[in-house]
Length: 248
Image (cartoon, rainbow, N blue to C red; front, top):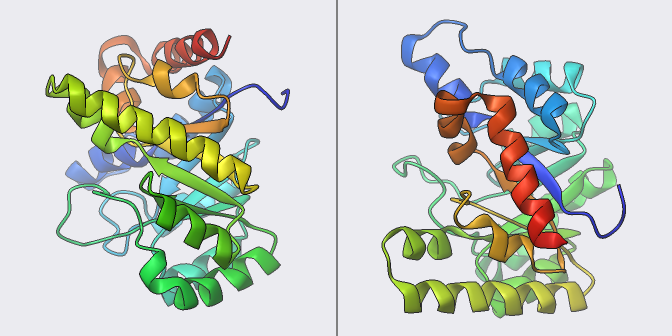
């Protein structure tokens, strides 16, 4: 893959959500991960939540064993998750905010107010060879803090942009998209690798994919939902096509 090609990370959390609704073994997130890999995903993302509402510890073990593409291990900044990450040493660790009562990750991590704690938290992960990413809003203060604590990557939260698009709020959508564009360029100027994700769909992916500084998009819920109608492989291939078209 060239330095300019945009990578696609496929998040398989919600395959596990469906599985856990019945408490059995089907559908299997590992099978979804292998299908995604075959369909052209450049990496697999999985969020091991404190309450284990979807991905389980066994899923992480299985993914580390079977994947040929990198695993992006999403986790909260807790001692428990740090120990799990240090045991497995995945390619990448993405630190995300986590509240038990939220349905999904609702916003970016507050880095600026917790700089000292987070700097100490990520240092052992970096020493273990994991690429450390911080999931944050498109906000200059948070980007600068992520840079200061030693993160190699930031992932910009695209949820506000996607929500505004879905609700038909054109001015707000355009304002959020402009913030993402400006902060992608700013983060890149600091030497951070820039990723983006949350809520992206076929309708919203191309403007973000067109930002030259963005190196990776992480997309999950939409692709798993779309797979119900067209199958996981065609769903991923269509997203890949739209991303490549926007980048070209």
